[in-house]
Each structure stands twice: as structure tokens, then as C-alpha cells.
Image (cartoon, one colour):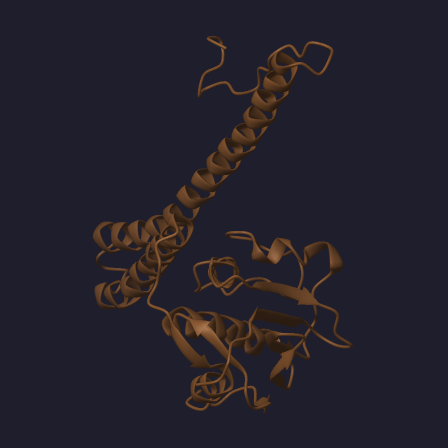
Length: 257
């Protein structure tokens, strides 16, 4: 045991034959070490990817400022100044999303209240700017208990994602199904390959096809949305659709108020 450290979790205890307490303890310790090793590996990958994502807008901002200083006669300083806020906004978005994910993973409880999910979808969709039209179908009596702010974040993420990839139409359906409140968001775009249905929920995922992420976003929107769904004892998945992609949010249904 003394040889096992936080820096090297690949070592395992020898497992004696038999089913006595020592054998069971060795197997339990080895299973725990395997889980810790996987968690540490995920953490290292996340730290590396996050560093890259933060470094990219910083590098772009530095290049703009250095060009303005080095070539004052060739570069319009006002143009460099106007371009700078976009880089800082992206940094701010990434940092804010990382903080939200940290709060979700810490188990910190959010303010919870009864919410008419159909009314919330209608309210959040109505003020949208012109663009791809959104068709809404809401069945009555779809109530959930949760954080209004967090659920708005999920709906905004799903709707923005669908509108970004739709060719001509986005459809949102809110309905009660088998004791669950179900919100489906469908678009008529390129769709998502079966192999990518889980990958789209990973942090900073970049798909190789037409459903690449928004270059101005943080790359965390769908990951945060799934975390919020899990925090509400629900789920968020990509499900089958005759055309395009279909994201389905399921939450425990509660009594109307």
C-alpha cells in the first residue's frame, strides 16, 4: 500500500485466492484504485483541454495588440480595440461556465420551486430574435420542481443549438410521458451520427462534421445542460429522429400548483 501514491495509481494489490476477508478487502481496494485512476485521468484531460481553450482567445488578443504596437502605420488601432472585446467575452463565457459546472458537481443546492414547464418554454421562446422559426406544441399540466434559472439555461442551450444547425425549422414539444415531464427539441439539420450521440455532451467537444460547435461559444453548453438535468434527477439524451437531431430532456413530473 505504501508504494501507491496520488502520482501513480496504476499499482494494484495482489489478490489472494479465496473468499475470506483479506481477499474481499484486496478486491475492494483495487476497484477503488481503478475508479480513482480513471477520475484522475479525466481530470488531467479536462485541465489540459481547458488550458488550451483559455489560451486560444488570449493568444489572439495578444497578436492583435502586438501588431498594433509593432506596425502602428499599417494597423488601425481602433480596429484592434474594437476586436478585443470579442476575445475577452469568450474568456468570460468560458470562465463563467466552468464556475457553473463546479457548482453543479459540488452538489450545492439551488433555489427550487414548482415550475410550469410548458409556460416556461413558451416564455423563453417568444422573445427570440428573427431567424429559423420555432414551432411549439405544449400539452397542459407539465409541472416540475427545480431551479427556474438553471432550467432556463438548459432550454436556451438546446434552442440555440437547434437553431444553429436547422435548415428551416425547429420544433419544441412539452408533454407528460409515463410520470415524466418531457421536452424534445428537434431540428431539420444534418443530424448527429450514432457514434457522436454521447460525445456531444463532453466538454469542449468538436465534431468533424457539419454540427461543429459555435466558434463563439464556450464549448460547455450541452455538458452543462446534462449536468443540470442530472441535478434535477432527470436525463438529457440525443434520440432517434426522422430528420436532423432530437434532444430529449426528461424530468420527474410533479403535481400542478
